[in-house]
Image 1: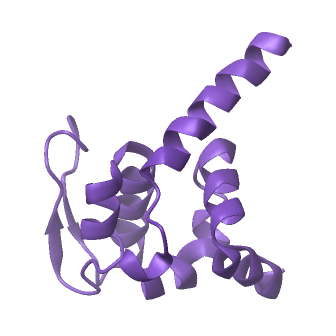
Image 2: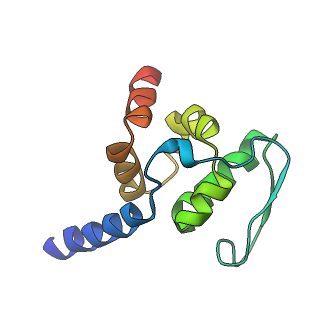
Length: 115
């Protein structure tokens, strides 16, 4: 059991290091086509139409899970992230969810408002 906790702590620390200082740094596109680079998507779909909700959700899941700081600020948008968070939080790992919600009150409050 301790090993599982240790792995989770390491994962959370890695995700936390990637975070922007503030959500306002997330200045990614809100519409149109996004082509994610190979270091984020090494197999499968790499082109996402942000105007299609399912593709937008898939894009955000990938960037949250695989992206480094520069990827997060380039591909994510603050308003879209906050708006999608009540659903998106259920589709990402607990480690990612906990790190983002601990760092940004806006995400925790959007979750409570949706509940």
